[in-house]
Amino acid sequence: MHSLLVTGGAGFIGSNFIRYMLAAHPDLLIVNYDKLTYAGNLENLSGLENHPSYRFIRGDICDHETVARAMEEHSVDIIINFAAESHVDRSILGPAVFIETNVTGTTALLDAARKYGVVRFVQISTDEVYGSLGEEGTFSETTPLHPNSPYAASKTSADLFVLAYQHTFGVPAVITRCSNNYGPYQFPEKLIPLMIVNALNDRPLPVYGDGGNVRDWIYVEDHCRAIDVVLHHGVAGEVYNIGGGNEWNNIDIVKLILRELGKPESLITFVKDRPGHDRRYAMDSRKITRELDWKPAKTFEGGLRETVRWYLDHAEWWKRILSGAYEEYYRTMYVERERSFR
Ligand code: NAD
Ligand code: TYD
Image 1 (cartoon, rainbow, N blue to C red):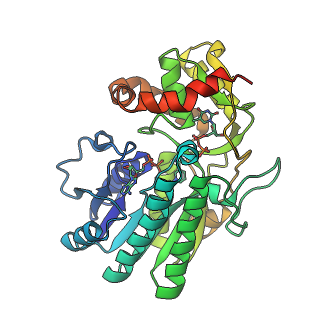
Image 2: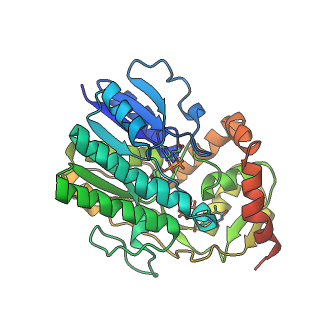
């Protein structure tokens, strides 16, 4: 029986991944290792507390000793690293913690992978390592790395350490680079959940710049399935792009959300742009389709409708988040911005 250390399992994608894996592979032991930062929420895993194949350990990936204890106590032989500071805007407010968790933390896990001789290390990375595209083209695995935000720079550094540990020490590591995820349990600092909860509260919807920035959206469960495929069949030292093949500009998504909720477009507020804002991301995922037979299954309209429904049905989940430190974050991030309408 394999034992997986899933770091960051209390966050958005990690918690979806744990639910997915417990259903798909009941023979695996899943050890969720999470520091429970502002983004980590054990409510994302409610109902699993007593699952026979699930354990939770509160710990920081930068803390070698606690990582070592987790590895030994549960005979971990696979590490999947989701743990990260994940929000671009926060990385602009304060990059230091991004370097600490995303770079130092990833190398601490790589050291543990070496020491305990894991059979697989999966680094969950992002399309943002490639930088920004113009009107045309897509990112492939061979596109030069050109990160623009502190978040993207920290994820790129982590990727380079993963490849170096694979090359130098033979750590059997693979990297997945995915586009923008959406779905249940996403913290309402990211575009889609932020717009949903603001609309539900009849609060202005703050669209950065001209709203013409483009992202390639993928439903979180499609991403989880891709990670599962890479975990089982990916080749050590390889990078796999994962995309939705689903480009949307921000303003159209915001309008779609308002339509789903029956709310007026007058809630849309154009605000001061994000500094260094990447214009367009688009993924070429042909490698994972060709080599590992994966492709996304969910349509965007269907996935977005389900996601809106989920937030409607789980108001207590996001209301608890909004009632905590979030309000101060929102003030810091948006009040000034909203004053400087374009
Ligand atoms: P998230 O912010 O929702 O969750 C991050 C989790 O990591 C939280 O549970 C948090 O408590 C935990 N964490 C943070 N620092 C930690 C530390 N030092 N030690 C242990 N745990 C720590 O993030 P997410 O959106 O679920 O993203 C997960 C991963 O996927 C990240 O590595 C991110 O870079 C990557 N990714 C995200 C997206 C996206 O659209 N959200 C797209 C591509 C890649
Ligand atoms: P985000 O969800 O932060 O993901 P990322 O920047 O990592 O792609 O943002 C997605 C897009 O939405 C990005 O172009 C920035 C834009 N955006 C807004 O216009 N307003 C907002 O309040 C947020 C959070 C994002």
